[in-house]
Image (cartoon, rainbow, N blue to C red):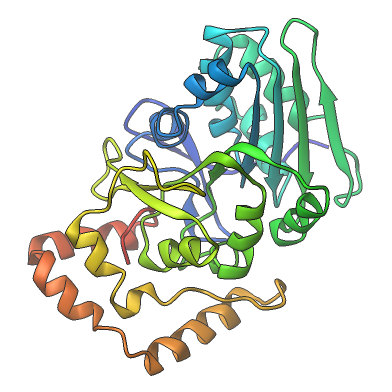
Length: 319
């Protein structure tokens, strides 16, 4: 059966992305989908340097989507050391997304070896969504890839039970307002358990609620400028050393009611319930007003641009 077709949107770097009718957002920043994968995830985590130092690398790609973050990782790793042992685990809700990316030609600008790998990861998936497809690639590449399809909240519990440890985690769900279930304290606590003690996690989001959830999960956080975007991205690790510090503006943001995290005690609640729970907690919170923080740090024109971006369905706001 041919994969469902998705709405395609060109982005500023010449690559394209999909629009999700389910979540009401584009899958990537329209400032550049390929650039986002390369800068926010591969460069920010110093993936290649880590792999060269260790002699191997284990990746966890949370919300695999079209496969761009994995593609950017393989592109850089294979350019430097094709024989490097790579272990990849991807979490994805809908296998039709990576399959459609292949069918609609959105991977055509990645190196041919990367296209072949992503096609093998996505295409021969079992009919039962609860199953796992696992691929062992050629001896020349030394890549082992596993794609877990279904609710990431359930799949991450399986990885924790297996004592899975990733050197690098790409955390790339839809934005917190659209997909709060993958930004909760409970989910991110499980993600943190899958991060190696010397590992690094990267996400495009700098939302205060997300950063609070990461610190509640026991991680230290850092801030990194994201090329082509108004807002920075976030890095997290078990160790505080070598993380770029948060600005005063960002530190003060964590003292406002915007920092009240999303919660999902059973890891099964619908998005509306998670949003409602947070709204109730914010209403009772003794934290500072987010509006006062905005008036201190953001100009009226900046607020207008942020609201316009949000309405357009793009990702990355600080709120």
